[in-house]
Length: 595
Image (cartoon, rainbow, N blue to C red; front, side, top):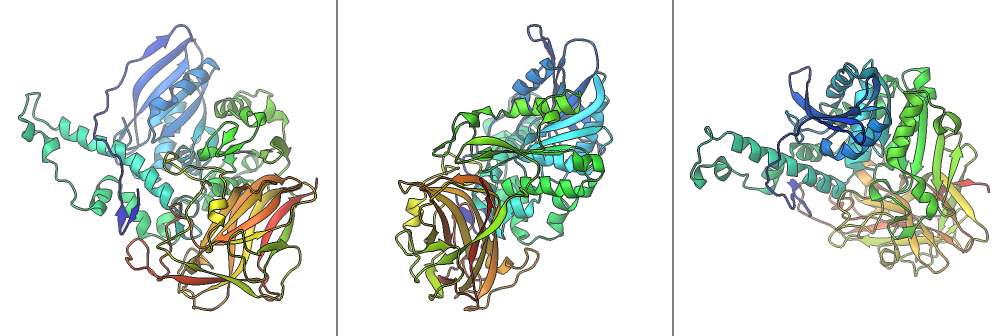
């Protein structure tokens, strides 16, 4: 899979038909009633279909609603489990996906359709009128956008590993295009879109008579003659994403973080340290704590931060084993406990524990906190230092507590035709071809175009929990370039595992709302948001920072020309320089927690 000028290469599409809807059944052994393909009409007349799982006994029950683009049938196991626990579960295909009618276009219809779905679910004869929503990734987006519309019967949501701004922490980050995620996610979604095209063409046959093979609509379809044309046909939103690289009105219409005041329900936000949407999940929690639409919602915010998210679950994620405590996280169990507390008043862990619970890596334990970020965490600067040869882990780069030294800078040549490759990290959605999570970074650190700054081996354990940033002073020979930053934990054997990272495109150093190209050779401050982590650097380990100008294919390559990479065909090398003298005190800012 690769980026191409003006579009996307859709890989592995299979043109297949989709089976028809099932029938309502009663599972006597589990006392669960299942109804499949139940139709709901939206306010504009589009038929959306849902599967419903409910207790077989008499009575009215709270409803748990999931609106998904990933096929409602995938909710069956949880639906039966929740029904046995006394809930009605409604799993609905969103507009234009699988069994639901209409146009599929991410984010566009979710507020209104979500509102209609909540009110419809609340009116079901076996509903007690209380509706909660659940699910992760885009399913988290359907919840957040529904909550923005504040339907009267929505009582709470539980968004798992989702974003707060579909420009800045979904499609772009620091102004760089999230190439791996955007292309792999879109390619997967385009499979169902292609299936629908074939199904609609087949249904258009005259009557039921058999036609000669060449007369079937499938074999007479006019396919686009270019990859960009195929993308426009199957995923028009992808082309729109490329056409809107700045944070403009196209993105603002769906930006959750600009609409926190419209959300009036308690929210359990589930984030993960190696998740692609970690930054957005944390913003949702802090933003809602400060600005939700009423006091009950502001006080009702909860945060749970686990390890992998889209990067994986269980105790082993990437190449790291996080121990038995990591296995305690179970999304289904957490969701049920949240709604048993919220909708049924059960005095479980959510009635007793602190509002924040997070997994502390390194010591591999769960811990409750009163707030996020932690009030007791102290922002501490680790200054970049060298004798001018910080290139690669074999260089002389250091992190010190003293600002500035006699050597002003470190330089490297960034060549977009030979970018630094992505190794692990917060990736989605094709782990087979690009493995996510914590991975050994030594191959990356062997490159001369990667600056490496490390502390000496620590004399005692050191905890870093909270937001991580890099205050970088740098210059480039080009009118535009990227700067990347990666926080790494180096063990006593020299194995270097990534923790969290960030990127900033030079043209967006001041704001992602407008382009300001660089003046070649001029030193600029770059504030790189590296999101956050919670990690205990153990005694004998080293804290390490990597600085470079590419992380490909997670992010698209900056071609250094000042033109848009989506359409430009030219590339230029850039000599990029990082300064760390007293006037330009570049520093890694870590939230240290006293132990």
